[in-house]
Amino acid sequence: MKRKELPPPCVIAVDVDGTLHLDGVSNTRLITWLEEQKAAGYSLMLWSMRGEEYARRVASHCKADHLFDLICSKPGYIVDDMGWQWIKQTRVVTSLTRGAG
Image (tube, rainbow, N blue to C red; front, side):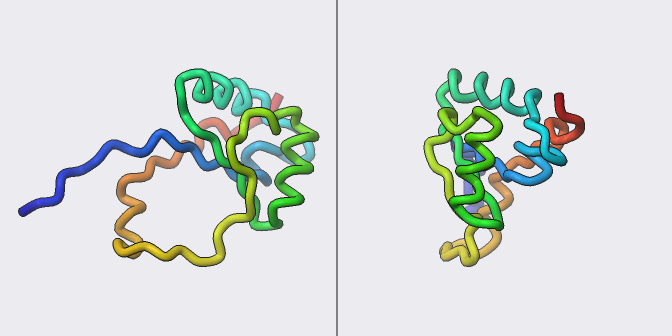
């Protein structure tokens, strides 16, 4: 029996460097979009390979820390019965990471 494809969960994970924060400048285009998604009922997660404290500092600098339900480090390990198959249910948005201001 073929497994039914599920819609993506209403959770958006946002990276810090090159995404929320572009060369020291807040990505206001992304922040506006995140405000819209939050108002639509999405949960927002901010993460950084540089760790939770760094992610918190940048979110505060960008005046966006109030948007996030969770601020954390990027995961170093993922434990999932589906291995990497879970990624097929995830959409990547890159159009909001080009150009800040």
